[in-house]
Length: 398
Image 1 (tube, rainbow, N blue to C red):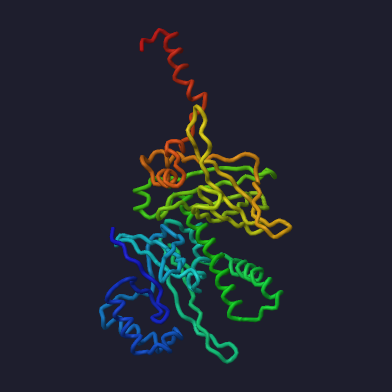
Image 2: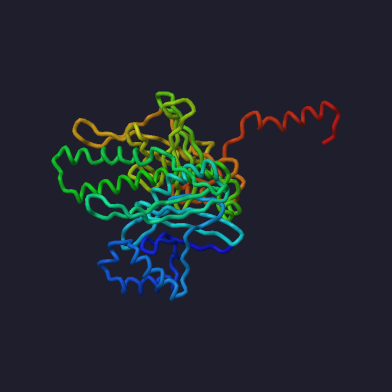
């Protein structure tokens, strides 16, 4: 299946190919014609005309809308000049092939699109959608501002509504992040704006990670993923804290390390909260990932190798700690449960020989991947013997 990656170009007010020679040459020509100063200002009707003309002259594609079946939405990280950038990746599939839309997580377009994807992944996951965008100029206080509005139409051709409340929740987080600085007398708008942008981006990255998990839970993913990995295998663990609340972890291998989610029951019946996890070697040994629910202390999820016994090799223990500080301001970790959980491969993962999750665990913790498989229950172990006994009693020769 042919795959292409597209991105939103604000000056062209259209989608263009990523890492395409003709496109890059066209944008270079347009930038030279417009000039660096005007180019950095972004969209204007004049710049739009120049960029599109350059794309046509170089034989480069640009598209107003991307269409296909919605089969993927996830957060990706890219590296450039020693910095890490988060991207929203949306995958669409149709008879012509696969289109991956890539957008900067901090961009207005990506954040607006995520609010629509929140609706679409519940109502139209796997169905045909059309993603578009347009630049909208507005006048405020004598200045011209440009909003880059994301659009999405469902299988019926009707606009998919944005899930309400996301920008309000992001604003609340921004205010909470800025408050200590403001209380300390900080007035530097540049620093405050940087805090706002970073906090807002982190919020929408969390939302996007949840959308990815939602589609996996619905059994929807790009065909290559479904074909290679079956029905969404993962490593699972469940831990009940001292208040009786269950925390359920799910993890899978991505780009050489484990990522996943931590879910717990919310404040209302039938409500659940979910936050993303990304595991890395940590100070406690083994692997750790930080998690932050909206109304609690930061958590640290730890995967470690258990001590072997005379009869059992090492397995993988799962612990969750609440992060805090003591009276002297030193960082503290308090385990929120009595006993460690046990990391296990779910049924789908057990069906895959030499799965990547097992290799990641073996490399990081030195635990045999076979020890991730749940031990059969005593009843199941006894079943064959009971069956033989019954057959003998009935005079059946074995």
